[in-house]
Length: 299
Image (cartoon, rainbow, N blue to C red; front, side, top):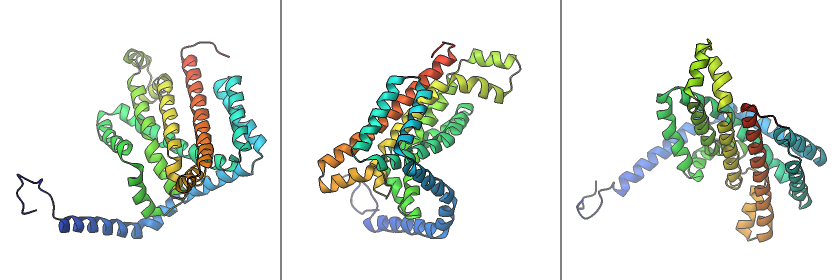
């Protein structure tokens, strides 16, 4: 400890001791990455292969077919021809201004990251809703994930796996997964207890109550969580581009370093257009799901 008086200066470690702690942590993590880096890289290799395949699929498919498939998916989710026209117009403008390939790359990584966040997040949210102890453990971890700057957890990921798509996917999933976990937990906990008691009275098992009562009734809240997860994943596009993830983020990063205003503006607007498309479609699907749960006849 410092020999100066603690009354006049805050007691703190000596610089030498602090340097030793940093060296110890750095060397420990470096040894860990050397020992297990190849194994962890091999673990994520199937995900990398799928990501590369999906990106190539979007890039090699004719643009009119991609727009047609996306429009059909939008129609199935929303049943709104106005939203379909808006999506088609936005994608045509993106392609007309020469950002089609980067938009497909960004779309592929966002869809993969969101799918991973949903696959991992919903079971965790269900576990939190069924156990107060699990909730007390997971909630502080999510607080850390949401408040810690993205650059901080990019450092160990890049040290472990290098730059590229997988570190970007991991960083985006860590940043974007908390909303779907929190809102899955909240949605299940808000299900009316009288409804659960009625299901139990009819002989439903815990699994049947979860699959047939709790998850359907909490679906609007879960969809709100998925919507927020998509938005947070899109907000990481530019940061992920700093570790080699191709897409709309790289031109934005290039425009920042070289002061290309128009390049940054156009690619930024393309990111906004993607965000609006994902937001409107997921919200429309959530509203349709809610109306279906309430037994309202819709188109």
